[in-house]
Image 1 (spheres, rainbow, N blue to C red):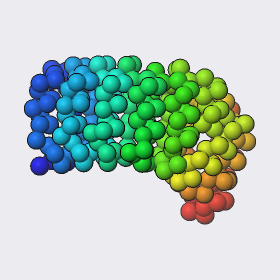
Image 2: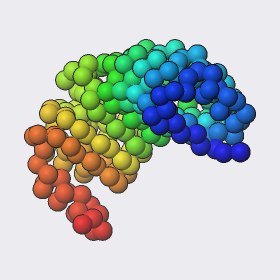
Image 3: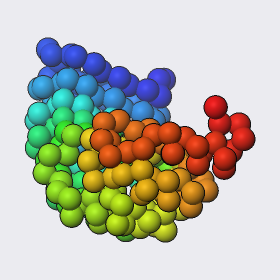
Length: 222
């Protein structure tokens, strides 16, 4: 039996068809749903009810999946370690914060893009993200400067993420206009576990300074 189920751009498969595909996949470890406009909360719940070994869940461009579907994951998928949510307008703070704050999970990878979450979810990541090694935040239109301040994505409080996410290995910052070279240099110096720092459209960033700091910390860096 397969351990990975990926459905991309499957416009004609609805609730019934998807349920039949995953019905007996009790060993499923990775579920990837992308551009499945007819998959609802109820069918997602029916699928993951048979997936007690699920560790990786990715949901992208699924407009009928919302907070209710995420909340069910807490009880049905106790081994989940990686969550990726991309362009799902019905998923907001209530679903994301409850999932990430659950004592049932130890997340190592969190990716949030283009969702309707706001500042509260970022505060939850900061508080409960001690074991997160891969964090990606992008296209979060409802997150204000205060939200990024809470998680540490500004010069003033970038140090917060140093203290709370001590095992962070990979981090991607995209369109973070409140981050400058000074903040990133300080961050790179003190996060000893950091292996990859990806910067995209961080307008105040001084790229050469950050590269210099990382190179001095690790002689193997190009």
